[in-house]
Length: 132
Image (tube, rainbow, N blue to C red; front, side):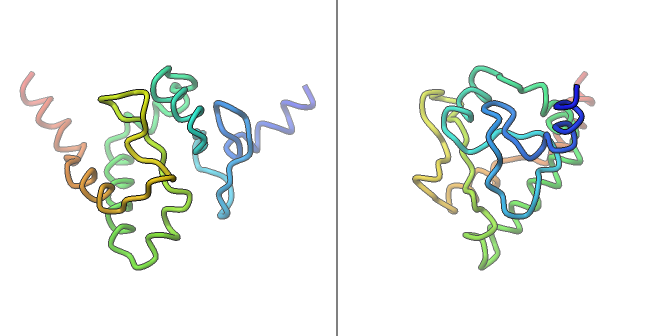
């Protein structure tokens, strides 16, 4: 019980899959998150390991829109290499055995292209609501 009492306040400082401490320099994450290790990213995106921890963020249209807007602004910054450190690891949805974005192959142009293809989530929700 003592361990749980000590650990609960620091949960967001650790990866939800491997339980290793996050490497971020600016303090703990706001929500539970997966680390950048390829096995953890694969486990999270492909197998759904601990995906329930992010359901709240994934279903909040305003939160998603804010994150996308912040990423777009960061990509325009001259400090983007610092802002995107660590660089994201994302499993390719078309080929789950590879990473679409990898710290080993950084491409800010690919990130920009991916963000440009993302519709505003609130608009998607409105369209879906109006079609039903």
